[in-house]
Amino acid sequence: MTSEVHPTTHDPFALKRSSDTWWDDAVIYQVYPRSFQDSDGDGVGDLAGIESRLDHLVYLGVDALWLSPIYPSPLADMGYDVADHCEVAPELGDLDGFDRLVASAHERGLRLMLDLVPSHTSIEHRWFREHPEYYVWADEPPNNWVAAFGGPAWTCDERTGRFYLHSFYPEQPDLDWRVPEVRHAMGDVIRFWVERGVDGFRVDAVQQLMKDSDLRDDPLATTPFVLPLGDEYGRLDHVHSEAGPEIHIALEAMREAAGDALLVGEVYRPTRDLGSYLEHLDLAFAFELLHAPFEPERLAEVIREGAAMPGVAWALSNHDFPRLATRFGPDRASLAATLLLTLPGPVFLYQGDEIGMVDGPGAEPAFDRAGRDPHRHPMQWESEALGGFTTGKPWLNLTDPERTSVASQRGNGGSLLELHRRLIARRRELSGPLEAEADGDTLLLRRGSHTVSLDLSGTDAPTS
Ligand code: NOJ
Image 1 (cartoon, rainbow, N blue to C red):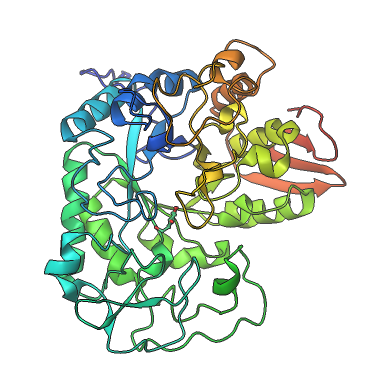
Image 2 (cartoon, rainbow, N blue to C red):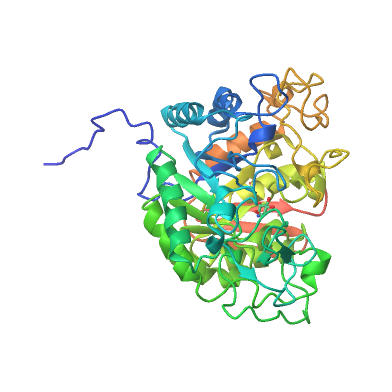
């Protein structure tokens, strides 16, 4: 006798789930909330706006969405300076709206991930005043450490006259993960959101969670780091200010709180170093692919290295770096999409890349002191001047909706949007290990009986 299993209750994920780890081969769409869709005309994207656009993600066929930070923030680092981890920024909505968004996503079979920012808080977080012991302090700057965006990593707190450590902007004091109360407090944050139905977290700046316990100087760099760094930051070899060997203390605490929820690490380190992080995280980004030049040899090399490391997640762009269509040229966006969406393992797609949005002019004065506004312009839904993004004055102007929009590409078989749809649908047919090799100007990706051949010499459409 054979038995068949039928779902007994309505489970929108039942058809898609192939194993317990829903993220295997998943396509996860990165939403930059302030720039996705405004619902109330204040010019800033919000949660209700995201909810109203979920059908775009269903149309694309992605499995999940990841929201860049949605928390209250003074916006020194556009939300990566969190002032309250268990609230929603008022301009984005509220917790009820968040619950509605989760429910709407789940009804559509979409999983929802948040950005967890555990390595630092905003200087305006109440912990900085009420629990100074959560942070790293010294009477004088004890070493030569530099902040990622430049300048010393130690700033004097005017109230106490003591110096606190910050790996990023001075408005982002670093938490000390050796302090048990920090681990408990951040565990509570994780549980708070998991209980609200969140399916996972992209974990920010994991390499900064644990530093040298003796706060020793970083030596001068003798060779360039594998990944691009700010000029000043790149002058040092960050053997002590990053990636401390006790990282497991922090990651174990997060894993315990997260349970089965997905943890994807933003670990800005070479792919070969990711192993110790992946003992506790489910996934970590292979940043060498994101930064690889569009050349067959180098691409094949980084893809082979990443594919050999179980737990690698792929992305070709995000809110921190020039947009894909700007880096490679708009004519190569379809090649890049084909490359990304045929890789084994989970891939992340940054909002707007599916229509080939390019970098915009940014703002004057800039919102981001590190110059990343150009990669964060609002999503272009319609071809009219405000792009269907808002009815008010957009916080950051639209770039070129008359040239590039969802509306103009939807249903047009030759468009980049429709190519993304086809690739995402056909991705489900791909299985088996990957072989990547360069053959002259061509990058060959083989999986099972499928070969993807990408001619990177010119601007021709990809073949598969
Ligand atoms: C990585 C985030 O992606 C970036 O936007 C932010 O500035 C830093 N981490 C600091 O949180």
